[in-house]
Image (cartoon, rainbow, N blue to C red; front, side):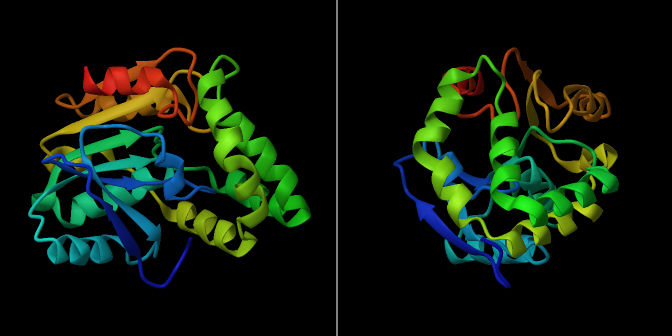
Length: 232
């Protein structure tokens, strides 16, 4: 949900380390509900795209967290990058999933038109494109738990505002050189963010770790293979 000020919810899961989960376009924090990693989770229940970094820093102060790891997926990767550049000393690890350097303006403008013409039809097509044909586990979970609710409740105003944010969102890999620990995960069958573009970002970051997943698409973390690789 887009808001003037970001709001967060802490899920204490009995671990020492803390992870900020930042969702992508046309989703919310519930997209991470099946994610089982060895962290406590801090998730945004409302997001201010322009103030996210500052709002998150204030939230960390509230819990007296000196450092956290960031898990930014798709659009969330840009927000994670924004925080990391503004507060590099507060980042233990930057984890980027299914990212790209930027989204083409023409593509984003076309999506706006399609949303205005038939929001539900476009979102249904978009969500299906987020999964590779072979990722039956990930798609099955999404259909069972979130698809209908997202189709019914995603507001076009929030969707368009997020697209406007993406018009100027950029990841300059050289600017991330000051971040000591970076991991990048990407599905080879990603139809939203090209795999080769993520590999290009990695090429500028020799110390970053890159994991490519065969037969997985844009939402790869819903598949059991992701947890196995992440913890490996």
